[in-house]
Length: 113
Image (cartoon, rainbow, N blue to C red; front, side, top):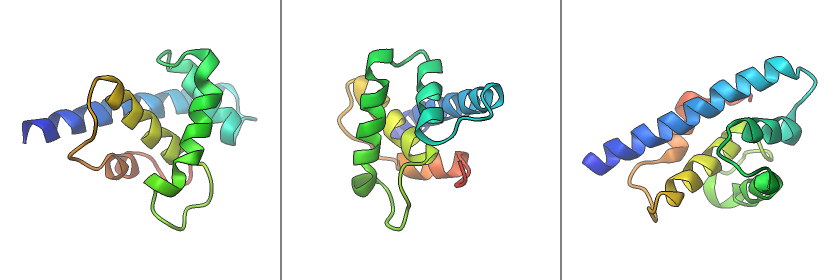
């Protein structure tokens, strides 16, 4: 029970930070969209080495079939946030989760981003 609470809190914190960063980057760069926008968002989080941003986006795109519900079309911000939150959680030494990061992402990030 405590682990689930910690996971939810971790995921919500990371996702909310990404969403705030997305809003700021979108406002500063209204012409950006898709991967270019997601790249700038990840760069602005200051949690990602700039040398690895493109690799993270490629891994997120590659993980779509494995991590997302069927019927989604390509890489969206939800998929980037899901991948990023989960990999950040793994970086803290955890191997898996007891809560669904996808459900948390879907509850916080609109589908149209």
